[in-house]
Length: 168
Image (spheres, rainbow, N blue to C red):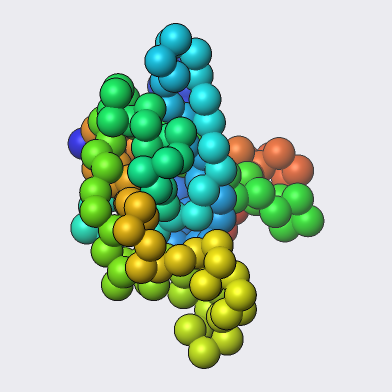
């Protein structure tokens, strides 16, 4: 896997780097981009979890993302951490070939915990109706990225010398 920073091909790099875990550990939305049967791009916002050097996203046998990836596994995932008030703008891109895996209820529960908090506080209607953990059509999309791209533009309000994260 390669780790790239933005604008390298233009003869300059972003002045402040960040660790991908700074974004991967947050309950943000990941946009999964796939290729449709006619070659058109398609993207879908999804919850995710980062485990075992891969990003795991939810899917089902009926979902278009799963169908696209079974036909053509090439994909990209983009995640943005944006906090206008704090002046934070971090972009993380992951690229590679995904696999569609059988549902792992334990991993799915860890993913739900990331977004919903402790299991005791989960909305039962949501879990039983939407996030049906034991549904036989449930799948996980696994992307062990071939490359990771970071772009820290957190200086958009302050200038590079004051950018997040602060200097140690």
